[in-house]
Length: 374
Ligand SMILES: Cc1ncc(COP(=O)(O)O)c(C=O)c1O
Image 1 (cartoon, helix red, strand yellow):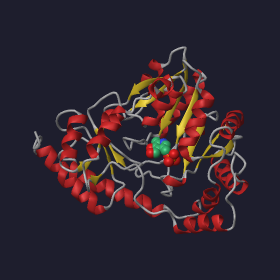
Image 2 (image 1 turned 180 degrees about the vertical axis):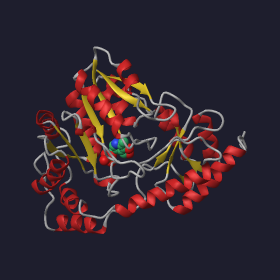
Image 3 (image 1 turned 60 degrees about the horizontal axis):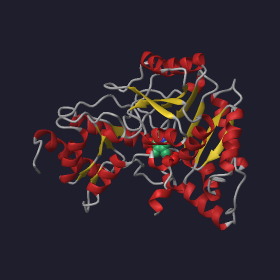
Image 4 (image 1 turned 60 degrees about the vertical axis):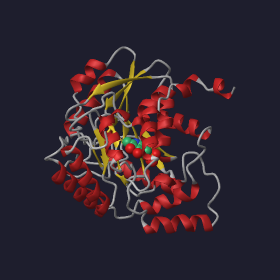
């Protein structure tokens, strides 16, 4: 009976790829887990204490939907320093995800086409579909760099906007300033919205981070505390952009999420002052270790940020390769969860040195000895 009540909207979200991986993984007791999308490092101590203090001192109620003044003002000062010539408004959200949901609901009408770069962070595709929009995928294989000519070719009269994510999940790719500028100028020229997910901007190694907002002031930016400060479960993020859009997002937040958790907002003020420089060093060292140990066995496109690599599988498809990896106790994610192609896999190095060393051993064995279990 209840089955028939399920909306088309919910049915249209296809989560079968990741479910298959979780089903396979659920049989493992202590997997070597290189599938994780959250930092293994702890929340800064000062932020923990600030959260406890906020709870103890009674800061537990709703806040205004746009977020508490001191956090909003602190973030607005950062944004104003980065974009001194722009008038940008800012809202505190429930994680970067909250910002993505509100931005997409604010910007996408049913039938609107939204350009997404493939491989993509899975949520973009699902959220566009939830809003009734049509994801249009622009391939970035094999190097995962964005080619403006491919974007231009994908634009139709129905195109409403473009979603960019640099550093990217699942590839770790970081766009160069020239690539970012080209996309920003193209969006401006064609009157498209640009939604920039900058949640990994704090984790960039060789290259430097650039935001399209520098060249296109209409860009809506979403960002958050999950990756920089390991606050994934605390649900704190923010979005900034043109006033009219941020105000519409605030209206929708009022009737959905209401506000980000209040104690966490107070802790966010303190987290912003935490030194996270050494985290970048830790992740860079791990990435370098993986590249050094695996490059003889795997083709690994350049990855200058976040904490992911997206190697090509040395045999089979992404799915068959990952099934074999899981049978050897290694948990990784097949590329088709993030892509229309099934030729790669995602490796997260948000894991301890010991886990990485064990993972490397299995990965080398997988490349050398394709099928042990069959
Ligand atoms: C690209 C990207 N955007 C957004 C998010 C969600 O972040 P949050 O925890 O702040 O909602 C993630 C989490 O994995 C991500 O990889």
